[in-house]
Image (cartoon, rainbow over all chains, first blue to last red; front, side, top):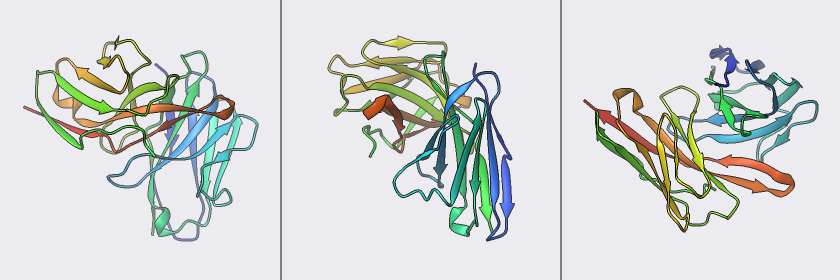
Amino acid sequence: GAVVSQHPSRVICKSGTSVKIECRSLDFQATTMFWYRQFPKKSLMLMATSNEGSKATYEQGVEKDKFLINHASLTLSTLTVTSAHPEDSSFYICSARATGKNNEQFFGPGTRLTVL
Amino acid sequence: DAKTTQPPSMDCAEGRAANLPCNHSTISGNEYVYWYRQIHSQGPQYIIHGLKNNETNEMASLIITEDRKSSTLILPHATLRDTAVYYCIVRVVYAGNNRKLIWGLGTSLAVNP
């Protein structure tokens, strides 16, 4: 099956620092990747959709300058949480849409961000 | 807003079939029904999807009513490892063929020994 990896799996940082999360499609090319955020006992909330080589499309209420997304290649997208604050602590999950595999979305294992 | 409603929790005995219902009464004709599950602190795992016809794969069966207003995910022989939150999702198609999965709160399935 299609495998999506995320790195790091867990990160703890101080308030005010920036954190970069990587999302990779390991055995397929993904023209579209998605970034989600999930708070405890809540559902996944789509933050943004990124297409390779173009700017990401952010959902309403998501600050593009705070959550920087770069989709530089067909197998890599990065999410940078800039000037992180405790309220940014959450579970961040990426997914990749696999062209040629019925356009299904495959999800990464998630990154647990804790901002102190 | 999610276009699906699911019971918040269900229990199932190990080895028995787990039948998870989902209502999607406002689904449009070109919108697929997807099922994913999420084990605690992991990313979602794809299970199955369908449009109108019933579907079956190695993990589960999906039964969609003729009017498409509801569906049921069937795990034929539940095991302890099937304990997870199960999400029934309608894939919405926006302008420009922009497709998004709109997530609800899911059903927390507990498989008991």
